[in-house]
Structures are given as structure tokens and as C-alpha cells.
Image 1 (spheres, helix red, strand yellow):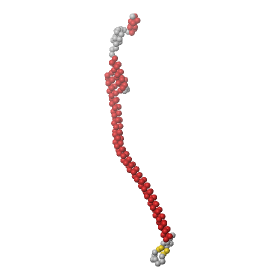
Image 2: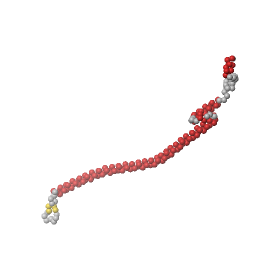
Image 3: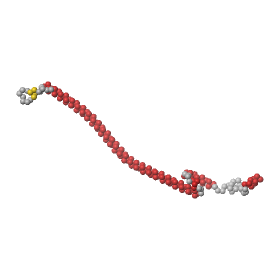
Length: 176
């Protein structure tokens, strides 16, 4: 692009035409301007990426904080889980014990009713506790009124019951 000429009487100095110098200077200014624009664009991009990195870092810190709080909650609830499992075991044991004790109570109650009222054990073998209570109340009311009734001892109508066979009694009744 440039043509160099050597000036007469100079010792190894080169002379460049002014037109070439101006072209180089304009090219340099244009390159500097492009470099300045590129640097400004790069600074804008860097700022945008830095804000995105800061935002991502903030989100990461929030996630770590949430994870640690969840870990603490899990540790606290692990105690609750073990307590719940223990409570379930105790409940199952209590239900089994209740079932066994209810069976023993029924057996004792049946034996007491059989011994007290002298009834066959088979008649109350399949009754529940409520049914046994009702059955015993019925036995009490029947036995409380049981005894020699008014008619059996000549009470009731005030007359004595005559003895004899039914045929004799019928003849006596028709003869009157």
C-alpha cells in the first residue's frame, strides 16, 4: 500500500508519503474506535453476566438455607416418627391386653352366674358382657318373684284348693 522512498543523503532513513500516513492514522483511529466500542459492549455484557451470577448465587444461598432448615425439620420429625411408632406399639399392646382382660371378665362373670343361679353353662357360653348383664337382671327378677305363689297355697281367691283327681273335681263343680 505504501511506497517507501529513501531520501537522498540520509543514512538508512526511510520516508513514507503523507497520504499513506494519513491512511494508517485513519485506520488506527477506526480500529481504536472499534476497540472502544467492543470494550463498552463487553463491559455491558460482563455487567449483565455479573448480575446474573449474583442472582444465581443468591438463589443458591437461599436453597442452601432452605435445605438446612428442612434437614433440621427432618431431624426433629424423626423423633416424632419414632415416638409415633412407639405409641402405635403401645396402642396395639393395650388393645391386646384389653381383649384378654375382657375375655377373662366374661369368663368370671359366666362362672359367677352359673354358680349363683345354678343354670347350665352352655346357655350363656356365647353371650357378650351386655347380654350377660341383661340375662342376670332377668334371672334376678324371676327368682325374686319365684317362690310359693298365692294360688299354690290357697291364697288368690281366698278358698282352699280341694284335692282329688281332675275328674272328681269336675264332678264336684257340676254338682254344686
